[in-house]
Image (cartoon, rainbow over all chains, first blue to last red; front, top):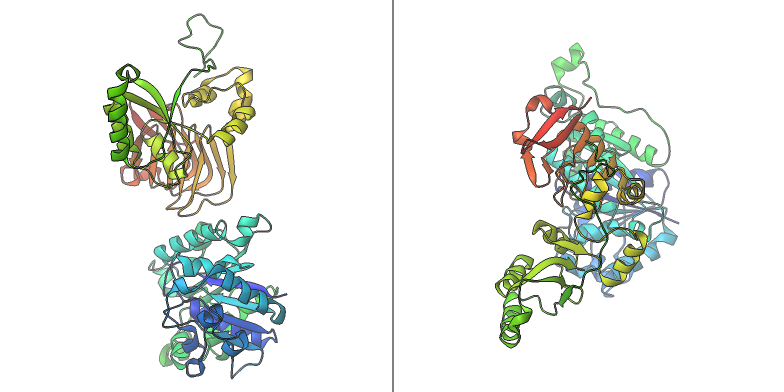
Length: 272
Length: 252
């Protein structure tokens, strides 16, 4: 049975899609059969980040409306075995998604996959609620800034009330915090919230911390999930995150200001 | 403060009572529709409309939001005195309280609640009873009305104790709201809004481990974060209504 994990945040632009792509890639690299679903109907991005935008024929809405089979819509990743992408529709809007349709798709995927990663749209409207509704676990992506933390807090409230698990009253959704775009230097100067502040306000288990990194931007634009860039700080941080998701206990990295040596001071930092 | 029920100079005693009450069962949420029908009735039987107390029952309406204030105004124009609302959604309940009206649970639920607390009168005033009384019998009902919430109250969430005290073991985050007929105790940081004594109990208080509140209110007397002495922020604090104003003091 698959673990259904929603990647969500409330606020837009904090790195949900980047994280969904990086984590699903990381899981597949560990041999876990993984599918990542783009729930952002109308603003489809996941296919770009995953570098498969030219291979999209059918999408989530087509499957829900019975215009295509699930296997026709699933795109096999070219770089990693075991990784599949179910893209969103760019031409429809979120009303095209139905709870029954989503339930049916997840039910079919559950038997075949180890992990189902749902990439949620921003906001707290229908699309976001459908992305989280059937989840077993949630990764709440947060930037070290006040508005992002407050929106994540709101999402955590919805996870505890507006999901199938909450409505049935069984085990609650397992919540994980993923802090992205963390820049220790700017935290030190007070431009950003500290990791401790975020953890104290949200009081949720910390799954990982991704440093602000040029590698992420480069990865997005090239359509190669940053997990493939094993030499980069962000790539390693996502890899740690995946390990923790699989139950390993790893110390936190990249959350402290690194003392720069003479060479790196002369030739620039190591964040490339 | 202690009220000794045995002493001679008691100002009042609480008693349960079953009073005849007219229930006005609304089948339309449109104030103008109601006004037209009331005008017709008034001309037929003017004797009935002598500031008669009525309970507005909205159970038959499937409206999450009601123009309650306008409906009440229409009633008062026709010499009916709305005293309470029965049924309706959470927003309806909140606006009833905001208008100084009582709120009754819908009939079925109401019966269950009545069984739960046999000795208590279902008047809004009973909230004062539970927080003021010192007698042993009331101890039980005030205990039953206390609500305990474990965990973080998150932005956008509202936790309320309609009949008594609210205890939160955790933080109340910015954008969250906690309400209680009695006092509010937060064993954590209070960053959101806290409204104690929502039915007018001025003896209610707010207690928290770390004061960062957006808004504090006791029986409708409020202070915004801007009005709070910054020396008190970030510390354990207690809030009371004394000398006609909200007083915030460090706790302990």
